[in-house]
Image 1: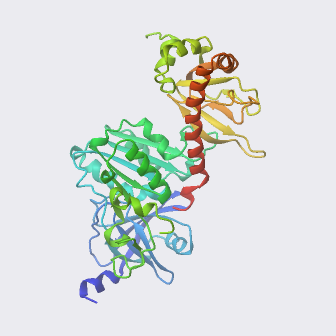
Image 2: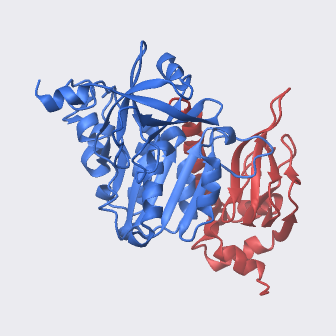
Length: 278
Length: 154
Protein backbone atom coordinates (compact mmCIF):
# COMPACT_ATOMS: atom_id res chain seq x y z
CA UNK A 1 0.00 0.00 0.00
CA UNK A 2 1.54 3.40 -0.98
CA UNK A 3 2.20 5.84 1.93
CA UNK A 4 -0.75 8.13 1.02
CA UNK A 5 -3.14 5.21 1.09
CA UNK A 6 -1.74 3.98 4.42
CA UNK A 7 -2.19 7.49 5.83
CA UNK A 8 -5.80 7.59 4.72
CA UNK A 9 -6.45 4.43 6.70
CA UNK A 10 -4.95 5.55 10.02
CA UNK A 11 -7.36 7.33 12.35
CA UNK A 12 -6.11 10.34 14.27
CA UNK A 13 -7.12 11.03 17.85
CA UNK A 14 -9.73 13.80 18.22
CA UNK A 15 -11.42 14.97 21.36
CA UNK A 16 -15.10 15.72 21.87
CA UNK A 17 -15.31 19.37 22.85
CA UNK A 18 -19.05 19.99 22.76
CA UNK A 19 -22.23 17.92 22.45
CA UNK A 20 -25.59 19.50 21.65
CA UNK A 21 -28.85 17.63 21.64
CA UNK A 22 -30.75 18.67 18.50
CA UNK A 23 -33.77 16.35 18.77
CA UNK A 24 -34.64 13.40 21.04
CA UNK A 25 -32.34 11.12 19.01
CA UNK A 26 -29.95 13.45 17.18
CA UNK A 27 -26.83 15.10 18.53
CA UNK A 28 -24.26 17.53 17.18
CA UNK A 29 -20.67 16.92 18.29
CA UNK A 30 -17.77 19.32 17.89
CA UNK A 31 -14.38 17.60 17.76
CA UNK A 32 -10.88 19.04 17.95
CA UNK A 33 -7.66 17.25 17.04
CA UNK A 34 -5.40 16.14 19.88
CA UNK A 35 -2.27 16.32 17.76
CA UNK A 36 -2.65 19.98 16.78
CA UNK A 37 -3.53 19.37 13.13
CA UNK A 38 -6.17 21.48 11.38
CA UNK A 39 -9.52 20.21 10.23
CA UNK A 40 -10.32 21.93 6.92
CA UNK A 41 -12.99 20.43 4.69
CA UNK A 42 -15.22 21.21 1.75
CA UNK A 43 -19.04 21.35 2.17
CA UNK A 44 -20.47 17.90 1.49
CA UNK A 45 -17.42 15.92 2.60
CA UNK A 46 -17.54 13.26 5.29
CA UNK A 47 -15.16 11.75 7.81
CA UNK A 48 -14.84 8.22 9.14
CA UNK A 49 -15.39 8.31 12.90
CA UNK A 50 -13.91 5.45 14.86
CA UNK A 51 -15.63 4.52 18.10
CA UNK A 52 -12.98 2.46 19.86
CA UNK A 53 -14.14 -1.06 20.51
CA UNK A 54 -17.31 -0.64 18.47
CA UNK A 55 -16.55 0.27 14.87
CA UNK A 56 -16.19 2.98 12.30
CA UNK A 57 -18.90 5.14 10.74
CA UNK A 58 -19.01 7.54 7.78
CA UNK A 59 -20.52 10.80 9.05
CA UNK A 60 -21.04 13.95 7.02
CA UNK A 61 -19.49 17.12 8.34
CA UNK A 62 -22.18 19.58 9.38
CA UNK A 63 -20.19 22.56 10.58
CA UNK A 64 -18.84 25.78 9.15
CA UNK A 65 -16.12 25.13 6.54
CA UNK A 66 -14.37 28.37 7.47
CA UNK A 67 -13.65 27.00 10.97
CA UNK A 68 -10.67 24.72 10.47
CA UNK A 69 -9.76 24.22 14.12
CA UNK A 70 -12.58 21.80 14.63
CA UNK A 71 -14.98 19.47 12.84
CA UNK A 72 -18.70 19.28 13.58
CA UNK A 73 -20.85 16.21 13.04
CA UNK A 74 -24.57 15.74 13.49
CA UNK A 75 -25.40 12.13 14.29
CA UNK A 76 -28.71 10.38 14.61
CA UNK A 77 -28.66 7.54 17.08
CA UNK A 78 -30.27 4.63 15.25
CA UNK A 79 -28.08 1.57 15.93
CA UNK A 80 -25.38 0.25 18.26
CA UNK A 81 -22.53 2.17 16.57
CA UNK A 82 -24.32 5.51 16.38
CA UNK A 83 -25.59 5.00 19.94
CA UNK A 84 -22.02 4.46 21.06
CA UNK A 85 -20.94 7.53 19.13
CA UNK A 86 -23.61 9.81 20.51
CA UNK A 87 -22.93 8.43 23.99
CA UNK A 88 -19.57 10.21 24.02
CA UNK A 89 -19.23 13.14 26.35
CA UNK A 90 -16.91 16.14 26.41
CA UNK A 91 -13.27 15.14 26.82
CA UNK A 92 -13.64 11.64 25.39
CA UNK A 93 -11.64 10.56 22.38
CA UNK A 94 -12.62 9.35 18.91
CA UNK A 95 -10.57 8.26 15.94
CA UNK A 96 -11.06 10.40 12.85
CA UNK A 97 -10.06 9.71 9.25
CA UNK A 98 -10.67 12.03 6.35
CA UNK A 99 -12.30 14.24 5.27
CA UNK A 100 -13.22 12.25 2.19
CA UNK A 101 -15.25 12.62 -0.95
CA UNK A 102 -16.24 15.23 -3.51
CA UNK A 103 -18.34 17.92 -1.91
CA UNK A 104 -21.24 20.06 -3.06
CA UNK A 105 -20.54 22.17 -6.17
CA UNK A 106 -20.34 25.48 -4.33
CA UNK A 107 -17.81 26.91 -6.78
CA UNK A 108 -19.87 26.02 -9.87
CA UNK A 109 -22.91 27.55 -8.19
CA UNK A 110 -21.31 31.00 -7.89
CA UNK A 111 -23.47 33.69 -9.46
CA UNK A 112 -26.57 31.52 -9.29
CA UNK A 113 -29.50 30.99 -6.96
CA UNK A 114 -28.88 28.08 -4.62
CA UNK A 115 -31.76 25.78 -3.78
CA UNK A 116 -31.18 23.30 -0.97
CA UNK A 117 -33.69 20.51 -0.46
CA UNK A 118 -33.21 18.51 2.72
CA UNK A 119 -35.08 15.62 4.26
CA UNK A 120 -34.62 14.49 7.87
CA UNK A 121 -30.99 14.42 8.93
CA UNK A 122 -30.11 15.27 5.31
CA UNK A 123 -30.02 18.89 6.46
CA UNK A 124 -26.73 18.18 8.28
CA UNK A 125 -24.56 17.69 5.14
CA UNK A 126 -26.18 20.77 3.58
CA UNK A 127 -25.57 23.09 6.52
CA UNK A 128 -21.95 23.76 5.47
CA UNK A 129 -23.30 25.02 2.13
CA UNK A 130 -25.55 27.46 3.98
CA UNK A 131 -22.59 28.73 6.04
CA UNK A 132 -20.49 29.03 2.89
CA UNK A 133 -23.13 30.92 0.89
CA UNK A 134 -23.87 33.27 3.79
CA UNK A 135 -20.15 33.95 4.26
CA UNK A 136 -19.74 34.72 0.53
CA UNK A 137 -23.15 36.32 0.13
CA UNK A 138 -22.22 38.62 -2.75
CA UNK A 139 -21.11 35.64 -4.87
CA UNK A 140 -24.52 33.98 -4.92
CA UNK A 141 -28.10 34.83 -5.78
CA UNK A 142 -31.03 33.79 -3.63
CA UNK A 143 -30.61 31.04 -1.08
CA UNK A 144 -33.68 28.84 -0.73
CA UNK A 145 -33.94 26.02 1.79
CA UNK A 146 -36.80 23.52 1.56
CA UNK A 147 -36.68 21.20 4.54
CA UNK A 148 -38.92 18.27 5.37
CA UNK A 149 -38.86 16.30 8.61
CA UNK A 150 -40.90 13.54 10.16
CA UNK A 151 -42.57 15.70 12.81
CA UNK A 152 -42.00 19.12 14.41
CA UNK A 153 -39.81 17.64 17.15
CA UNK A 154 -37.54 16.11 14.48
CA UNK A 155 -36.61 19.46 12.93
CA UNK A 156 -32.87 20.09 13.24
CA UNK A 157 -31.15 23.41 13.97
CA UNK A 158 -34.40 25.19 14.81
CA UNK A 159 -32.76 28.37 16.10
CA UNK A 160 -30.63 28.65 12.98
CA UNK A 161 -33.62 27.99 10.72
CA UNK A 162 -35.35 30.97 12.32
CA UNK A 163 -32.21 33.13 12.01
CA UNK A 164 -31.68 32.22 8.36
CA UNK A 165 -35.32 32.91 7.55
CA UNK A 166 -34.89 36.51 8.69
CA UNK A 167 -32.01 37.20 6.30
CA UNK A 168 -32.44 39.13 3.08
CA UNK A 169 -32.65 36.96 -0.04
CA UNK A 170 -32.93 33.82 2.03
CA UNK A 171 -36.13 31.78 1.98
CA UNK A 172 -36.59 28.97 4.48
CA UNK A 173 -39.53 26.66 4.01
CA UNK A 174 -40.21 23.77 6.34
CA UNK A 175 -42.76 21.01 6.38
CA UNK A 176 -43.38 17.87 8.40
CA UNK A 177 -45.07 14.58 7.59
CA UNK A 178 -47.45 14.97 10.50
CA UNK A 179 -47.93 17.42 13.32
CA UNK A 180 -49.79 17.88 16.56
CA UNK A 181 -52.49 20.46 17.08
CA UNK A 182 -49.98 22.97 18.43
CA UNK A 183 -47.93 22.88 15.18
CA UNK A 184 -48.63 26.02 13.19
CA UNK A 185 -46.36 25.24 10.24
CA UNK A 186 -46.88 23.23 7.09
CA UNK A 187 -47.68 19.54 6.88
CA UNK A 188 -46.98 17.62 3.69
CA UNK A 189 -44.18 16.18 1.59
CA UNK A 190 -41.12 18.32 0.87
CA UNK A 191 -42.01 18.65 -2.83
CA UNK A 192 -45.20 20.48 -1.78
CA UNK A 193 -42.94 23.40 -0.83
CA UNK A 194 -41.80 24.05 -4.39
CA UNK A 195 -44.83 26.07 -5.31
CA UNK A 196 -44.01 28.61 -2.60
CA UNK A 197 -40.66 29.54 -4.17
CA UNK A 198 -40.29 31.57 -7.29
CA UNK A 199 -37.73 29.36 -8.96
CA UNK A 200 -35.74 30.66 -11.87
CA UNK A 201 -34.68 27.29 -13.28
CA UNK A 202 -32.04 28.59 -15.69
CA UNK A 203 -30.14 30.33 -12.90
CA UNK A 204 -30.59 27.82 -10.10
CA UNK A 205 -28.29 25.12 -8.76
CA UNK A 206 -30.10 22.59 -6.57
CA UNK A 207 -28.47 20.45 -3.91
CA UNK A 208 -30.56 17.68 -2.43
CA UNK A 209 -29.88 15.45 0.57
CA UNK A 210 -32.15 12.99 2.32
CA UNK A 211 -33.51 9.48 1.94
CA UNK A 212 -32.85 8.19 -1.56
CA UNK A 213 -36.54 7.87 -2.47
CA UNK A 214 -37.08 11.47 -1.45
CA UNK A 215 -34.10 12.62 -3.53
CA UNK A 216 -35.41 10.73 -6.56
CA UNK A 217 -38.83 12.36 -6.24
CA UNK A 218 -37.31 15.79 -5.66
CA UNK A 219 -34.95 15.48 -8.64
CA UNK A 220 -37.80 14.45 -10.93
CA UNK A 221 -39.98 17.28 -9.69
CA UNK A 222 -37.20 19.84 -10.14
CA UNK A 223 -36.46 18.73 -13.69
CA UNK A 224 -40.20 18.86 -14.41
CA UNK A 225 -40.07 22.45 -13.19
CA UNK A 226 -37.34 23.26 -15.68
CA UNK A 227 -34.03 22.68 -13.89
CA UNK A 228 -31.41 20.92 -16.01
CA UNK A 229 -30.54 17.45 -14.68
CA UNK A 230 -26.92 18.62 -14.54
CA UNK A 231 -27.87 21.42 -12.17
CA UNK A 232 -29.43 19.09 -9.60
CA UNK A 233 -26.96 17.44 -7.21
CA UNK A 234 -27.70 14.58 -4.85
CA UNK A 235 -25.68 13.20 -1.94
CA UNK A 236 -25.70 9.41 -2.14
CA UNK A 237 -25.12 6.92 0.62
CA UNK A 238 -23.94 3.30 0.55
CA UNK A 239 -21.97 1.07 2.85
CA UNK A 240 -18.72 3.01 3.09
CA UNK A 241 -15.77 1.33 4.78
CA UNK A 242 -12.37 2.66 3.76
CA UNK A 243 -13.65 6.07 2.68
CA UNK A 244 -10.99 6.45 0.01
CA UNK A 245 -11.98 4.13 -2.85
CA UNK A 246 -9.73 1.19 -1.94
CA UNK A 247 -12.10 -1.44 -0.64
CA UNK A 248 -15.03 -1.29 -3.07
CA UNK A 249 -17.72 -1.70 -0.41
CA UNK A 250 -19.57 1.38 -1.59
CA UNK A 251 -19.38 0.62 -5.30
CA UNK A 252 -22.54 1.80 -7.04
CA UNK A 253 -22.60 0.95 -10.70
CA UNK A 254 -19.36 2.37 -12.10
CA UNK A 255 -18.89 4.71 -9.12
CA UNK A 256 -17.35 4.50 -5.69
CA UNK A 257 -19.61 6.63 -3.55
CA UNK A 258 -16.84 7.52 -1.10
CA UNK A 259 -14.34 8.71 -3.70
CA UNK A 260 -16.39 9.79 -6.74
CA UNK A 261 -19.21 11.11 -4.55
CA UNK A 262 -20.99 11.23 -2.25
CA UNK A 263 -22.28 14.19 -4.29
CA UNK A 264 -23.29 13.43 -7.88
CA UNK A 265 -25.09 15.40 -10.57
CA UNK A 266 -28.53 13.88 -11.15
CA UNK A 267 -27.90 13.90 -14.90
CA UNK A 268 -25.08 11.38 -14.50
CA UNK A 269 -26.80 8.97 -12.13
CA UNK A 270 -30.52 9.06 -12.99
CA UNK A 271 -30.48 5.57 -14.62
CA UNK A 272 -28.81 4.09 -11.53
CA UNK A 273 -31.46 5.55 -9.24
CA UNK A 274 -34.16 3.69 -11.14
CA UNK A 275 -32.38 0.33 -11.07
CA UNK A 276 -33.83 -2.20 -8.62
CA UNK A 277 -31.70 -3.48 -5.76
CA UNK A 278 -28.61 -1.48 -6.67
CA UNK B 1 -58.19 48.27 -0.55
CA UNK B 2 -59.54 47.04 -3.84
CA UNK B 3 -62.73 45.02 -3.52
CA UNK B 4 -62.62 42.19 -6.01
CA UNK B 5 -65.70 40.56 -7.41
CA UNK B 6 -66.28 36.88 -6.71
CA UNK B 7 -66.15 36.24 -10.43
CA UNK B 8 -62.69 37.80 -10.70
CA UNK B 9 -61.38 35.95 -7.66
CA UNK B 10 -62.64 32.61 -8.93
CA UNK B 11 -61.39 33.22 -12.45
CA UNK B 12 -57.92 34.11 -11.14
CA UNK B 13 -57.64 31.21 -8.72
CA UNK B 14 -55.09 28.62 -9.81
CA UNK B 15 -57.64 25.82 -9.51
CA UNK B 16 -59.93 27.39 -12.08
CA UNK B 17 -57.21 28.53 -14.48
CA UNK B 18 -58.43 28.64 -18.10
CA UNK B 19 -62.02 27.87 -17.15
CA UNK B 20 -64.41 29.37 -19.67
CA UNK B 21 -66.16 32.52 -18.44
CA UNK B 22 -69.54 30.87 -18.90
CA UNK B 23 -68.67 28.23 -16.31
CA UNK B 24 -67.17 30.79 -13.97
CA UNK B 25 -70.49 32.63 -14.04
CA UNK B 26 -72.26 29.38 -13.09
CA UNK B 27 -69.86 28.90 -10.17
CA UNK B 28 -70.37 32.44 -8.87
CA UNK B 29 -74.03 31.76 -8.17
CA UNK B 30 -72.90 29.05 -5.70
CA UNK B 31 -70.04 31.06 -4.14
CA UNK B 32 -69.59 33.27 -1.11
CA UNK B 33 -66.75 34.97 0.74
CA UNK B 34 -65.89 33.48 4.12
CA UNK B 35 -63.41 34.13 6.95
CA UNK B 36 -62.28 31.86 9.76
CA UNK B 37 -60.48 32.93 12.90
CA UNK B 38 -57.43 30.93 13.96
CA UNK B 39 -58.51 27.84 15.86
CA UNK B 40 -61.99 27.63 14.40
CA UNK B 41 -63.09 24.34 12.86
CA UNK B 42 -64.50 24.54 9.34
CA UNK B 43 -65.99 21.11 9.82
CA UNK B 44 -65.58 17.95 11.85
CA UNK B 45 -65.08 14.41 10.65
CA UNK B 46 -68.41 12.66 10.07
CA UNK B 47 -70.41 15.81 9.31
CA UNK B 48 -72.27 16.27 6.07
CA UNK B 49 -69.98 17.58 3.31
CA UNK B 50 -71.63 20.28 1.27
CA UNK B 51 -68.92 22.84 0.67
CA UNK B 52 -65.45 23.27 -0.71
CA UNK B 53 -63.09 26.20 -0.34
CA UNK B 54 -60.71 28.12 -2.53
CA UNK B 55 -58.18 29.36 0.01
CA UNK B 56 -57.11 32.97 -0.56
CA UNK B 57 -55.07 33.59 2.56
CA UNK B 58 -54.14 31.70 5.71
CA UNK B 59 -53.58 28.07 6.56
CA UNK B 60 -55.92 25.21 7.36
CA UNK B 61 -54.95 21.95 9.03
CA UNK B 62 -56.55 18.70 7.94
CA UNK B 63 -56.81 16.57 11.05
CA UNK B 64 -57.60 13.04 11.99
CA UNK B 65 -58.82 12.26 15.48
CA UNK B 66 -57.54 8.90 16.70
CA UNK B 67 -59.35 7.53 19.73
CA UNK B 68 -57.63 8.13 23.09
CA UNK B 69 -55.06 10.40 21.44
CA UNK B 70 -54.73 14.02 20.50
CA UNK B 71 -55.64 14.97 16.92
CA UNK B 72 -52.89 14.56 14.31
CA UNK B 73 -52.45 17.02 11.47
CA UNK B 74 -51.88 15.06 8.26
CA UNK B 75 -51.90 17.92 5.75
CA UNK B 76 -52.06 21.68 5.59
CA UNK B 77 -53.73 23.74 2.92
CA UNK B 78 -52.65 27.28 2.12
CA UNK B 79 -53.20 30.20 -0.21
CA UNK B 80 -53.92 29.00 -3.75
CA UNK B 81 -55.07 25.55 -2.60
CA UNK B 82 -58.46 23.91 -2.74
CA UNK B 83 -59.87 22.36 0.40
CA UNK B 84 -62.40 19.52 0.38
CA UNK B 85 -63.72 17.09 -2.16
CA UNK B 86 -66.10 14.97 -0.09
CA UNK B 87 -68.96 17.18 -1.32
CA UNK B 88 -68.42 15.70 -4.79
CA UNK B 89 -68.81 12.01 -4.02
CA UNK B 90 -71.50 10.10 -2.10
CA UNK B 91 -72.11 9.73 0.80
CA UNK B 92 -71.05 13.43 1.05
CA UNK B 93 -69.48 13.06 4.48
CA UNK B 94 -66.20 14.61 5.68
CA UNK B 95 -63.52 11.98 6.33
CA UNK B 96 -61.26 14.36 8.27
CA UNK B 97 -61.68 17.52 10.29
CA UNK B 98 -60.46 20.91 9.09
CA UNK B 99 -59.25 23.68 11.41
CA UNK B 100 -57.95 27.16 10.62
CA UNK B 101 -54.39 27.38 11.94
CA UNK B 102 -54.23 31.07 11.06
CA UNK B 103 -56.90 33.62 10.27
CA UNK B 104 -58.07 32.42 6.87
CA UNK B 105 -59.97 33.98 3.98
CA UNK B 106 -61.55 31.79 1.37
CA UNK B 107 -64.27 31.48 -1.22
CA UNK B 108 -66.82 28.87 -0.16
CA UNK B 109 -68.60 27.01 -2.91
CA UNK B 110 -71.89 25.39 -2.05
CA UNK B 111 -71.53 21.74 -2.99
CA UNK B 112 -75.25 20.99 -3.23
CA UNK B 113 -75.76 23.96 -5.53
CA UNK B 114 -72.78 22.90 -7.63
CA UNK B 115 -73.83 19.25 -7.80
CA UNK B 116 -77.18 20.36 -9.20
CA UNK B 117 -75.48 22.50 -11.80
CA UNK B 118 -73.15 19.65 -12.73
CA UNK B 119 -76.15 17.32 -13.15
CA UNK B 120 -77.78 19.85 -15.44
CA UNK B 121 -74.62 20.69 -17.33
CA UNK B 122 -72.34 17.69 -17.82
CA UNK B 123 -69.63 19.79 -19.44
CA UNK B 124 -69.33 21.69 -16.19
CA UNK B 125 -69.39 18.39 -14.31
CA UNK B 126 -66.57 17.05 -16.48
CA UNK B 127 -64.52 20.21 -15.88
CA UNK B 128 -64.99 19.87 -12.14
CA UNK B 129 -64.08 16.18 -12.12
CA UNK B 130 -60.96 16.79 -14.22
CA UNK B 131 -59.74 19.48 -11.86
CA UNK B 132 -60.56 17.61 -8.67
CA UNK B 133 -59.00 14.41 -10.06
CA UNK B 134 -55.68 16.23 -10.35
CA UNK B 135 -55.89 17.37 -6.74
CA UNK B 136 -56.83 13.85 -5.59
CA UNK B 137 -53.97 12.38 -7.62
CA UNK B 138 -51.47 14.81 -6.11
CA UNK B 139 -52.69 14.19 -2.58
CA UNK B 140 -52.69 10.40 -3.09
CA UNK B 141 -49.08 10.54 -4.30
CA UNK B 142 -48.13 12.68 -1.31
CA UNK B 143 -49.92 10.35 1.09
CA UNK B 144 -48.08 7.34 -0.32
CA UNK B 145 -44.76 9.07 0.19
CA UNK B 146 -45.72 10.06 3.74
CA UNK B 147 -46.69 6.44 4.43
CA UNK B 148 -43.13 5.38 3.67
CA UNK B 149 -42.02 7.27 6.78
CA UNK B 150 -38.86 8.13 4.88
CA UNK B 151 -37.17 10.15 7.55
CA UNK B 152 -37.25 7.31 10.03
CA UNK B 153 -34.36 5.68 8.16
CA UNK B 154 -32.09 8.60 7.42
